[in-house]
Length: 492
Image 1: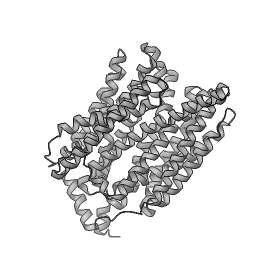
Image 2: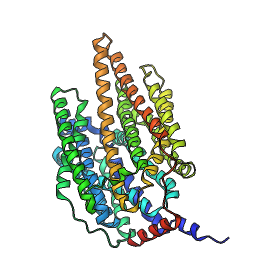
Image 3: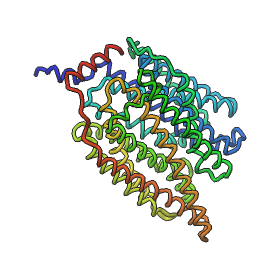
Image 4: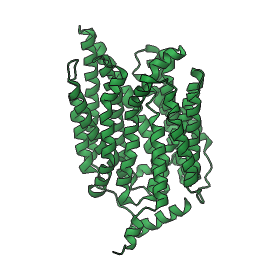
């Protein structure tokens, strides 16, 4: 049977499949490290003889660095070819991983985490931009389904993997076991990715870079400290939020001026596309709910149920695996039916589980908790791929890199906000219950119920926003899109 020209254009070449495959594996490895440290913090506090507030910086510094560096990727991806950006990202990540595995003390390990995060921050926008450039609009759902594995599954299984390693090996193996995979990906990328062609000549806006540091970094720092029970930390966090908002307004105003000459550090024009803006708001809510649960549920399992770290990780593992298995299928389904038929059921499932979590107590069967977590994972699988694919699809090629950078930035902020909000609510609920005369265990249970209740109401917002999303925005004609894809492939 002969193949029509349109069918031929729809098929990805072997080179394009290789490019996306290398980027997917690399992105999974680097994103995994965002949450892999959380379980190890108590052990490292003893190892390095530092305070709890100091050891938290191993996680906080990673998130802060990510949030500051990600907005820069909009500029990098228009200025440099994907091979150069990939080598920069994986080179930084590999160097940071090696340094972390050999770190002689806390200060060196902290610096290594910052280097790791710098590479991690570049990888996710690079992956999304490359897929947008190489894959036709009507086939992106299937490919983006694999991206969901990176976004949702990698952070979810990070604590489980960490628990398994710490159960029988030194903490250094959290890095040393990852290092060979990172180096292999770096070598494959250097050999297989194309050098690239002509790119934008825009100069880096140094004022934008300087303003973005307190704008985005201060926002994440403030959100991370808002739920702290320490009075001084709480006040400093509020001050940080106020200062960051001032710089954030200045940053946006500067970008609006610079984008008139196509020299913005982070172009704001993707927000002109209604579907992109709605999808971004929906993703922030989903990340807020997911990261909040990633924090609250393990705390409940350990503090209320008395489970150890390894068992806690194993309880949460099936949900992460289910998300990974479902993601490609959901992506293909999105290509057929669009976003809304998937987002609304996903949001409803997520809300139903979170409302059910409010009834957890010290006697809730573990089988029920695992079952609820599996249903929640199904809901999240129905949300992630449709949301970011529907949001990025309408953007023209010139805005692919900036749209990807905006999406990745808001994901980090959503995760930080979710952690801060739900932990703060949980702490306040525990204190209020204790003041009302409940014993310690009952007070903690009440605190977790309050946190899950807030997450449930946030997840209902996903359903509301999904109702306003269309099946898809107007896409370029087949001929125009095919010509654009072919042109982009030539420049890569």
